[in-house]
Length: 335
Image (cartoon, rainbow, N blue to C red; front, side, top):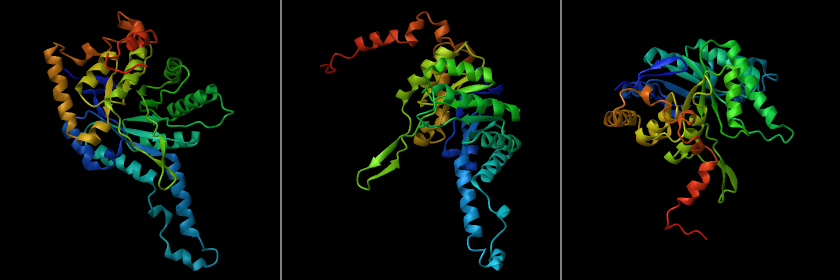
């Protein structure tokens, strides 16, 4: 079975890419991912806000009180001897590139246009083979329109593409008035790939402590349907590579997404739940399914059931809703 595919211009032996997660914070894990058959790894995300906060805290602790006791300066290390998370991140990319032969893709979440471009350049210089722009942004300004928000995203992509030569993918949320139009605009702006979709981690309320707390919930296979729909709709309509990164847990998920038009699929939650060696099982099951159904290559599968090639294009749109509701199991209680 030929599992080769191309993502962001990178030729990969399989479509089973590891998406950004805490797993890639450890070099040994990245080595294990390569050994398990991962064709590429997206590094954990670098957040500009975290770096800015660390720099402010560092300045405060290094220089607090030194205006009263100048000699105290001699007791502190030089600032360049202390690493921020940004410097650690770049070092992690360099070490990963030295340790493995598979492509390493940086993941960046900026908060200012200058931050996006500065860190993108540094990630490229550190040796990353590609860059994923993690556009994780919650807009709360009531004066900003949807056009303002979309233009901000386009400005980020345009600015980053201007300063780096490596391929750039954009990891998006599905919350746009017209997702198809936004995808087309990003494609025109130069995005080499679209990663669908970003999962916003929603806050919760602790009823005992009466405070807002974060709740991290791993994805489930049921979340696969949202990226599957949009990959199927976009396949053949834009030049950018397409990949799904939500709800990919097993070989059937991979197969469905490839048929919808994905160039690769990405896993994180499944690896956190089942372990890094889960990649081997998914690849084995993918090969077995392809052999049973006489698919000799991944390329034969890719896009074979996208909307543009479907005998029933409406299946990916609203018309399918009526049919779905009418097929509810009879034992469901409908009042």
